[in-house]
Length: 273
Ligand code: IPE
Ligand code: IPE
Ligand code: MG
Image (cartoon, rainbow, N blue to C red; front, top):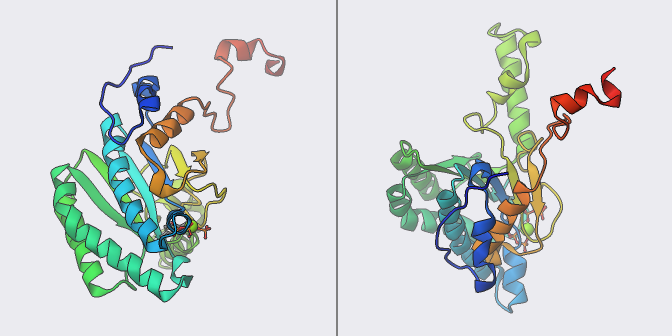
């Protein structure tokens, strides 16, 4: 197999792993990477600090990972920032997180735009404070024509709610006579999802060692490769991201088929008669 190596200097990378970049096959970069950025709170507490400290550090890490993902040729990065279930946290933490989103957007939108990144929010923003809604709308509007990289931020996002809304909309369209129930197929169903503009993630990364989806992209992750690491999100540096990419590149994506057998060997195989 011929590898096209990527030549670049890594930031936030340890010497031990600077050669990780050399192991990346440029021809097999996942186009769409989704991340459940988990472990901020525990990381803060473990350091004798606060959960909020962990959330702040999480933002710093996200900025690095966006830069690196864009550099190596990822086209879409979808991150889970706030779930529909996260409202159940103590009020103080919820408030801190919503303030943090607003602060980060105010500070970073110009830079994001300069980097030609399209910022896209996925979720129901209606319960957000007015200021946050405004900055979400204005940063989406400012970056909407950028085409080098898309950052999807899932905020007040829940996959079950998304699926229920899709079902409701299809039911309404059926009742109104716009479509027939028999016409509902995967394509039509996907056209009602909040991610309808995007291909499904090729790779899902979850940090902090939890092995669950936590109501994230339940439909879209059907055939994504899943990479779980014990590393907490606030310490998920460039090397950790590269390790996830290298691991992804070692996977054999079969999508239910038997890709490892060539057509020829299939014809000669036991099952072909
Ligand atoms: C992920 O970190 C960020 C959000 C959910 C907003 P957590 O806040 O879940 O941190 P842990 O998992 O409790 O350590
Ligand atoms: C998932 O993390 C949500 C985000 C990363 C925004 P949680 O910390 O909310 O998930 P659980 O509670 O561990 O399942
Ligand atoms: Mg968590």
